Amino acid sequence: MKKIYFAILSGLFFTQISNAQLILTKAANEPVIGDVNNSSRWDSTATLDNNTGPNTFWDFSSITSNTSSSTSNYTTVAGTPSASTYPNATFAEDLGGGAFNYWKSTSSPTTQLELLGIAQASLSFNLNANSAIAYIWPIAFGYNKTDAFSGAVSAQTPSGTVNGTATGTALTIASGTGTLLLPGAITFTNVLQITSTQTINASLAFGFITATIVSKSCQYYHGTQKFPILTVNYQDISGAFSGSSGTIRINNSIYTGIREASLNSDFSLYPNPATDKLNVVLTNKKAESVSVKVFNNLGQLVKTAQLGTATDINNQIDLTGLSSGIYVVKTTVGNASSSKKLIIQ
Image 1 (cartoon, rainbow, N blue to C red):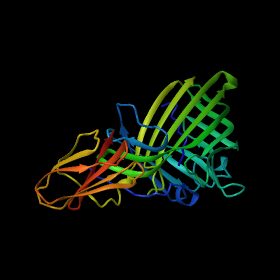
Image 2: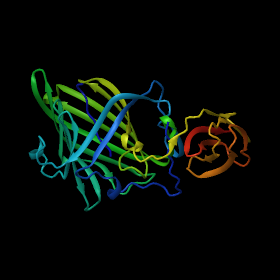
Image 3: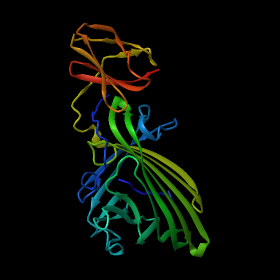
Image 4: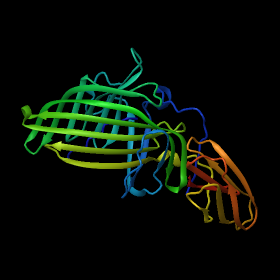
């Protein structure tokens, strides 16, 4: 779910084959009281692959794990620190550390999710009068919504609390579809990319303190999960609270329920990029049945090959007829599988 984050002071494989375009709905994707969204932190030293458009291949396989984790608990408004400030909120999002987002879910005149406020120890925004619309359901590729919001802002400084006003825009675009590759050869097809950009102009202490906050979030949704399977956040702040930051988080739930074992045997594909032939080389110590499946970036199965049960596999697969592009090659030995990216020129 789209969140607006403010921190101003501070070897598995899975694939889902589907020809239907993913559509996010209120019933399937809007949080309800009792939901918990757990994610883990990941790092990258390279430029991240957040390309947009249809039939895109997003390769995040090189990001590395981090010990940090994050949990969002969706709870009743009553009992939260700022409950009296948001009487129209239908649920609260507990981000931990005393930080809360306050949300309003409506069904009339449109089915939508609105952000009413953000309460943190260092900085709070009250958008009761003119909320920020996060989503208008349903959402499919091509969705584009810009919403203007405004409200009051309160910040804690060494000199005490200062108050002011804030105005801004929330832009949400269903900006891409395609295949997502994660570390450990976890592959998701039929993924919907949501790009959200929030620009906030804050003015405090009668204009003596100003700041512009630009927060961008790239979220990747799959039909098997309520919350994004991957989220990349960027934040850039100019003015009184200057600074920038970025985080990568993977939904911990994607590791739950995966029943395929990881393929421990080393295997290689060459040449890669390929043209009309592909060689598969692996060691099959238990002399189990070996098969190869090739999927295009829509998640469609385009080639299948049975490689037998020999202990040393060195087979050639005919790629004639496959168009240029990015593919995923799934190799299975017995009941263990793994995958690699293949480029066909």
